[in-house]
Image 1 (spheres, rainbow, N blue to C red):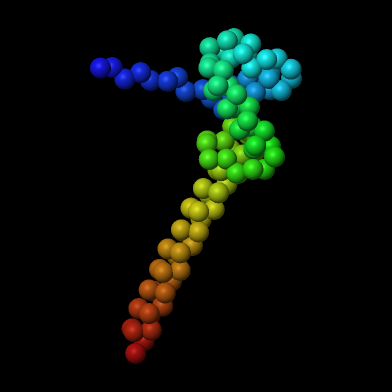
Image 2: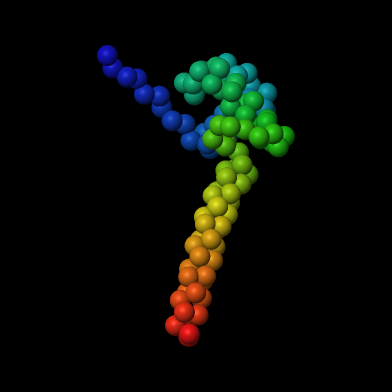
Length: 102
């Protein structure tokens, strides 16, 4: 039994397809032109509308703004982790310094 793999679409292509639908073309017309399922394109359209409305979306972000927010959240988490490590290192060095001075 072989496992079929789905082709991954870039966020840029998804946004372009959604924009065509929002500009007045039918979902079916755009889906056929891109070789994408109608329900898939419909899901992308709903997701972009939700993202633009500020609603939380569980799927990987499509809009540039949401991708940037996701990147910044990762960076914040990284920096917070580094801050905690530095706090612990400072405390360790301080206790070592105090013990040596006695």
